[in-house]
Image (cartoon, rainbow, N blue to C red; front, side, top):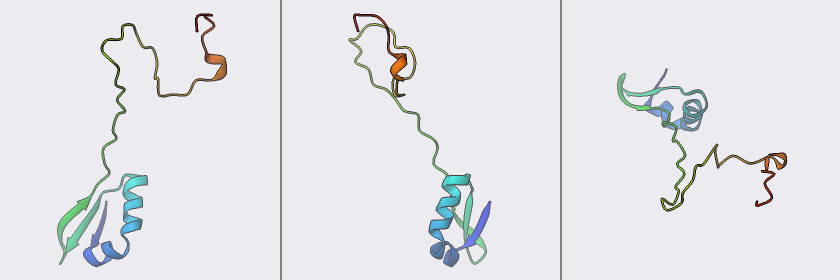
Length: 78
């Protein structure tokens, strides 16, 4: 946890944001020694895949990952 006063927060905001983003630090900003705000990392968002409900079948694996050339199906219908 990092505690800074408002002046220091203004002058080092970029460094503080990097600490929050990269290290997951919690930053408390104080005025006259009293906490008034905090910087916290945003929660990680899960990627959602929207599929047309009219499609039938099962999807296996993560469709957002790249496929290695050797990983393509050998089925000639593809």
